[in-house]
Length: 604
Image (cartoon, rainbow, N blue to C red; front, side):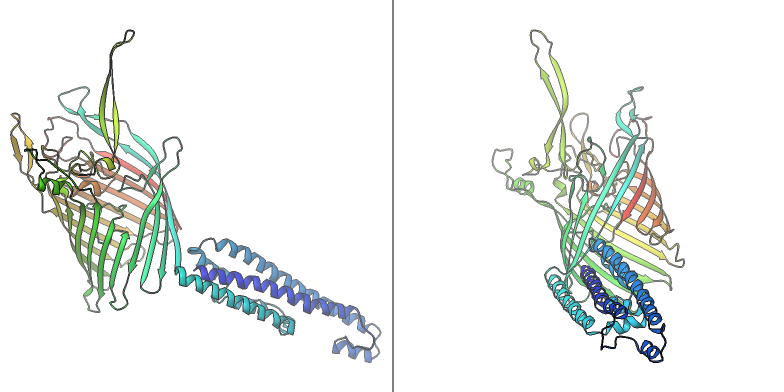
């Protein structure tokens, strides 16, 4: 903690002052007395006095030499001790700049006892018996009193800061990534055979950076708070990566978390949280990408049990506003205001949900966690892919430049970027043009989204080096609706929508806590067309739904704070380029897309 670091710093400074005073006031007078005698005053040691009384002519000189040698030895010991304390002060000054990990380091740097006041005593014990005697002299005791006042003042200052700010810790990470994407296809007519779809694109190679800095604090025993800043494009909620591009421009670094947590002492196990925070429920990336930091409120209650099998029960609920819209005014076909249409057009979007999970002990080193959750996306039945969550809509624009007397007419094609804020007002609302959910002929999403999400996680801890986790996740969208398309005559064509299930199976062995640790992971997922709301799930597969993917990654712990990871993701469209409910011509290309990632993560 920062307070411990300051305490150690004050004590080390005080010790340097103490040793300097002790040296100046104890040893310097002793050396002078040994070299010079004053008439009428006995300044010799008892042994030297006895030699003089016995009539030895060289005895006083020899005794003075012996004392000088002893004093010189003691001076050298003090010099070494002062040098060590100077080195310690430099280390403490550097360590206090890191209020998180630095606090613990300061404690270790001073002495393992953790008592800043032990610094002086430890140095005294390291010296000779003469030093212990010197430590008792009145001048030294005066220095001890001053050290005590400095310590008391430092303690008072740190207590005042603690009352104002509470305890604060810092953490974060920097991730450097090289990423290659191979085998990408577009859905255009094939250049060699226009009767089919698909053209293979060139490989994509890019360097990416992720940086995060977090602050955590506690005020009293019932309140926690947290702030975190992260890199990444602001409009991309499912990634904190920043591609190294755009001619060395500065990269965005913005608020990623900001929350307050209340744990009432009167109700142990209850937690109330508000702000922007980590996802509070158990999930896999099939339904919710790990980089998303939802915002709103969540409540949880956890209770442990001493039963042989039934170990824990946790209940979680959340209310997460996604998009606030202005009031809408929509005219009906008769030219009058439509109350229903206006109400739908001005409706806000939110994610509501709840989860119950339990942990069961299946023997001494085997446990099973079971969870059931419901995620209800309110208002999504009014969403249209004409607009998307976050960012800008790229609208194709064609401009014709009239002919002049010297130049013929020209046509210029391009894209116009429309900010999201211009589209969310009133009834114009939608999802990303990259969304792969089914869409009706009117441009709105075919389905609502109420996800029943079930997870089972089996943990085997028989091996300390390679604990094993097996996870299975099944999700079904209970609000999937038939798709309304137009047939050749323009009439409605209804297509049954049974693309509402998702499957995720994962096995992992190993850990990443200590130097030399290894971690292996394999995941398979199959996500149908309307199983999940696609702007929010796994971002590294070829498309967020109507997809089948395999992921394999390996992590080596080069240091507890340095991880090296290799990831490979192979994904494919099971229903072809046009997707479910589309008309993909026979023979169209449908190759797998491979994404390779090489990560180096530095944690602090």
